[in-house]
Length: 175
Image (cartoon, rainbow, N blue to C red; front, side):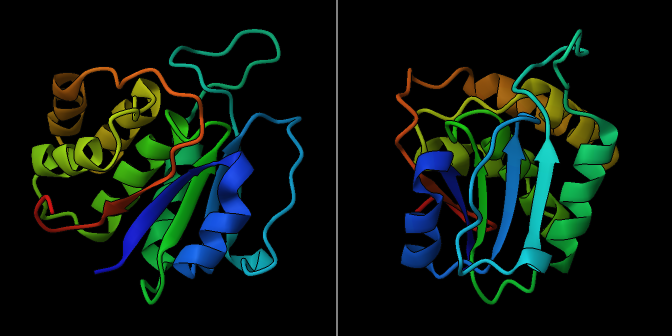
């Protein structure tokens, strides 16, 4: 079963090569520069500029918006699933796990939200999905509060140093 590789920025090239990823979603602050791994084609790389905040942005901060979530849903819908989807943010702890949950539900909408979130926690004790992205995704995907409740139930992840990539199974049971 193909999964979603969630990674910190520092390890995207390694993870793309190790897992054979050919498609990538980047959730980065507007001014953060990085190089797309050569194995990811430019037309299969979605770059979304946002800060890791869970409130409406002020000043130069860009909060996750509906347009960001719509882009994640649409991109996931075009993912051929022949190889893993790589999703990353700065540390791989908040924005990218939230985007991975949204992408998994976009491609397998019939799955149980709590089972999905438990797979996330099993794959990463550090993941703390961005609550604003989760809430927007929950609404956009018609989850009726189930995704928000599931993420709240698993709580905050353990403290992380931003060096713990993981694979989220898109569907199925906890391995």
